[in-house]
Length: 102
Ligand SMILES: [Zn+2]
Image (cartoon, rainbow, N blue to C red):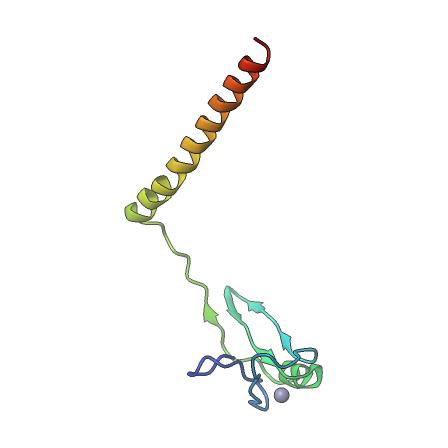
């Protein structure tokens, strides 16, 4: 779990993971059930096993975002420059090949 300060905490003992410290023992898992999911973190495999041995909490349902017209326009706005670069690169390559074989 991530607390209000943005730190990762063990789901069982609430030990805080300090950024920069070795994370060898830490586990981050994703659990899915019936359309919902949870992403708990654990300081050790023992605490993960303890959490899984108890009844699982209710999971937050996964919300599927429907793209809006604004999202579609943004996609097109991002894709167009890439398409233009690809076309210009092809023209440049064609020109270079024609210049070499002249
Ligand atoms: Zn723990």
